[in-house]
Amino acid sequence: MILQRSIQSSNRAVGVGLHSSERVELTLHPAPPDHGIVFRRTDLPQPVSISLGPQSVVDTRMATTIGVDGARIHTVEHLLSACAGLGLDNLLIEVDAEEIPILDGSASSFVYLLQSAGVVEQPVPRRFVRVRKRVEVRVQDRDGEKWARLDPHDGFRLDFAIEFDHPAIDQTAQDFSFEFSMPAYVRDIARARTFGFMRDVDALREIGLAQGGSMENAIVMDESRILNQEGLRYDAEFVRHKMLDAIGDLYVIGHPILGAYSAYRSGHAVNNALLRALEADPDAYEVISFTDAAAAPAGFRASQRPAA
Image (cartoon, rainbow, N blue to C red; front, side, top):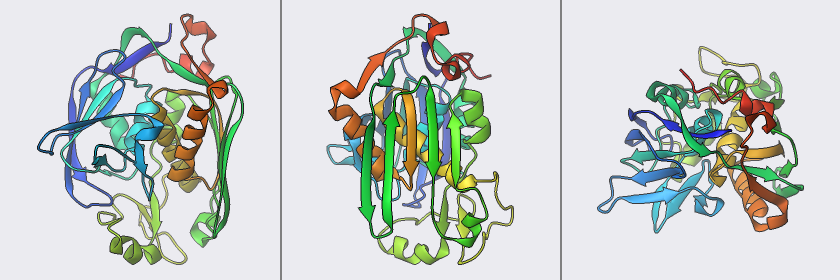
C-alpha cells in the first residue's frame, strides 16, 4: 500500500519574506491522516487556517498567494514543492506574518527542515489525482504565447521550456525533462534558486514586491551576466527553478498528480488556471489509491521509504 506521510516532530525556521522583507517565523507541525496540508496565520487577532485547493489561490503576481476571508499567505510554492518532493500529505504550517520566508531562494532549506523533523508513514492510503484526458490552458500576452497542459501518464512527468532572451540564460539549457521520484527531486530540482533582473528591481519595489530580494536568496542578473559570485548550482538552473515552482503550484490541488505536465513559459497564474480547468471537468481526472504498492508508478514506489 502507498501510505500517507507526515513529519515526526515540529521544526522551526526564521527568515525574511522575499516580497515583504518582513521577519517571518515558520513552524512545521505533524498532522494526523487525512488532515491535508494546512497553513495557519498565527499573528492575526484570531488565527486563520487556510486549506489547499485551486480556489484557495487568490493572487499569482510573482508568487503563489493563498487566502481565505481576507487573510493571505504569500510565496507558498517553494515550501509546497518540498512537500511534494518528499511525499508529504499532512502538515500544519504556522507563520507569524503574511509570507513564507524565502530562505535561500530554493526548496532545499525546506527539504532539510522537513527531513530533520523526520518523515513518517501513516496507516492510511495515500490519494492521487490521476489525469484521464488532456487539459490545456493557453494565454497570449505582450511577449507572446504561454501554455501548460496535463496529459494521462503512468507517473508524474514534467517537461518545461523557458524563453527569456538574456545572455546569461541563453548560455544554459532552456528546456528540461524530469520523471518524478523523491531521490531525483532532492538531487535534481530542490536546489534550483529563484532568479531576477536588476532592471526590474525598482519597478517591482514600487508596487511592493521583491523588498527582501538579494543575492543571498536569488540569482541576480544585470543586462548581460550573473552577479552572484558563486555562479549557478546546476546547468539549466533557471528552467529547473521554473519546474520547482510548477511542482509547488500543482501541489495546491492537495494530492500528488499522476500525469504528464508540459509547459512553455508558464508561471503561477497559468499553473493555477490549469488546476482550475482540471477541477472543472469531472471527466478529466479521478482520485485513486494504491492498496498494492507494486501497482503504483515506479517513481512513487521509490519514494515509499521515509527520509532519514
